[in-house]
Length: 281
Ligand code: DGL
Image 1 (cartoon, rainbow, N blue to C red):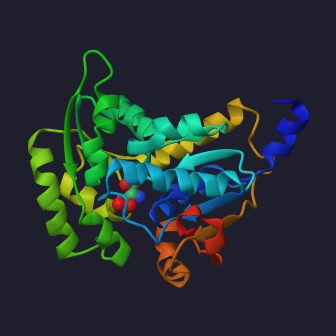
Image 2: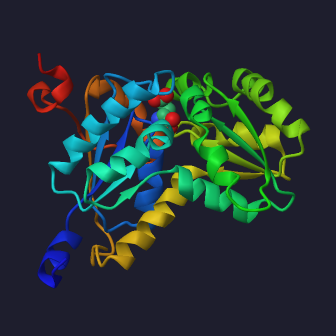
């Protein structure tokens, strides 16, 4: 990359996509760490959830989301969706020349660093757990830690409903986590964009001895490192803007997105259907 292009590119936005609005938790982490960066977010709200779909379908959808952002001169892409990262990242990496960051590898690295007993739990969507992506990463070191996984599908609608406190989420958390806790895990990867919204209830059920690893937080840290290493960090230290596009229900996203983003969401734009390949007939 020439120096002139590098300087120009550094002022460009970071592209982030997710199956829906859950990836705004990753944007929240990015904005805290990189307040000067502009972010273009695409949430595929017309087709969420990805976590219950086949690998072939998740791969096709992910390619289309990536294409949407790549056409907008982004300087780096973050696949904020755990399901898309787990299923599609290796293929997507070969499809674009831009730096591409997923959420699996950063979550794995943090869990390996923080688990003392080498007994690690992973929770995510059915597709993420079935893909084996977290297990593969965690079991790469020799000797490998013990890995215990559990799909937690009900956490997604609870987060979307904003039902993140009280008896119902606590019961659901016990239902999903008690088996993992009985295995003596001391680190738990929150392997889904929605789970950070349930962090308090998960922490309460898991107890103090279990480190909760937020893959989005870790991906934000990784993004900052890549931007710096490649000379792509925006020289501005504050004032970055977050522009949100969705494929359906923009008003709904405006209503509930603030809880995910942790700040007031600016106007949400419904993607013009002529721009997205999946609407072509
Ligand atoms: N964004 C998805 C993930 O992180 C959760 C929602 C879905 O199933 O699409 O895995």
